[in-house]
Length: 150
Length: 150
Length: 150
Length: 150
Image 1: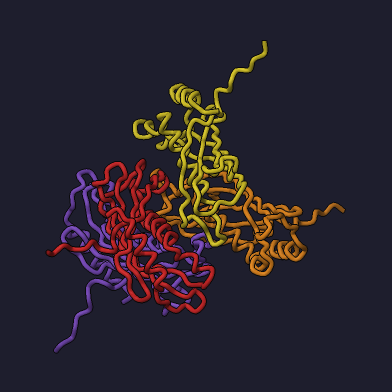
Image 2: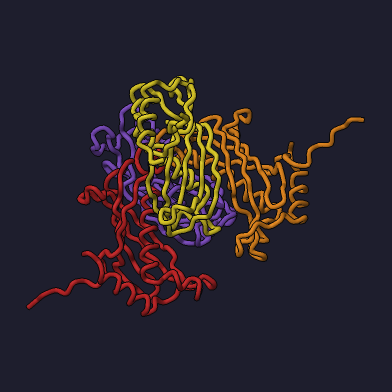
């Protein structure tokens, strides 16, 4: 018996489509490099909301901060277009977790326009200290990932 | 004898220079129309800080909201350039006041690139109700305007 | 007989829904004032495309520039939300035309969040001189407006 | 004799200070993650201009595109502040080169707020094909780096 169990993470449960705004293009006539980070941020926030992570911010002053972002730009984007943005958690550490963000043309999903990887750290906003991921958050991530399409 | 006293307002006491970022240009190769509002916002916030208006936000939950902005675009701006942004209060009402914002090329001050007029209303952030401008704020505005260069 | 003919303009033919991005909120926790101009710009560009105005830019170096924007902010917008953005031409002059832009909550259309009026001038990009609106453009505007929902 | 010659690259020749705009803060009250990419872009464009890279765009339709950006966020930034942004080329390959971007508090240079690494590819805008870095560009980079402060 050698059946692999499906991975518990990296199942891409959060996805949405975002229209490209004309004004997001820069003088090189392509969507500016900063806009991709906005798209991933929107996906990240949606993910956080679905795992209850942001509700802790008001109650306990504990919240996520972005420690690192790496973006690989694969294909230029121009107006008009619509981008399918997807995100998933790929690793959970002690006080941090890693997410991936995938951006494709919504009308031509075989065209990957960019990929990003982000590292998010949980901190106490009052003290600035790192905070361990608690089991409620970990369970919420696993539960959300279990709904993933991948 | 008919000597006019100088006006107590519209004396342009707040000014700063801001460099144009390449990425603020849009696909028409000019600085995008939204950027001018960012410049005026920066000037407005600086004005608010110099009159103590923002310190009331934490203490009393009273703060300014923008009710109206009108911008006249006079000349296109391109990278590289530096813009001199200036602002002044021109009118004080019961619960609101009017500001002007002037944007010129810092290296060629005779070139006006845009002018804006904004109406700011004071509200109670908890109740959403308008709040009367108090005499401390009015005095601070008059004091700041008295330092103006105009 | 005193039947009024329907107006040929101001029939709001262009409309779309745009999701609010979390990152469009500022430190006051509301969607920043500059974002409304981005929404109106997107509507304006869509309108221009549907009237063939932008195709003249490459062929004849004739194109629209924004001469004036006035925005009335009616209600604060917060994430998450979706905004219905609509635009229409209200006046056509010799070398310029006036547009209105209306922003409402897509899920609660009775809530007007902002209204804007813009003046657009047609210019020759090479000479900088104003250019008369030609009959092809005027007819395209009337044709597009005739499809309007109002 | 074992004297190391100074490195020809990574000498940080391009630097400027940029004021933080209030409106660049997001709802978490920190400068938004996308803004750091704008700062690095401004530094990159300044570097490109000083090496003549952009002048080729009009003449030969050859220009730089961003293939990858990785940002490590080291310390939150809040308004008001001024950021010293510096950039340098660290590697030159056949059709691409690598740059670093360093962001520090201008009034407290020991505080590193973020570091970024970017990979830039030279392409022919008409064909989309990669183009070899020519010796004129390489010499310009070496010449500019030689002026560096490091």
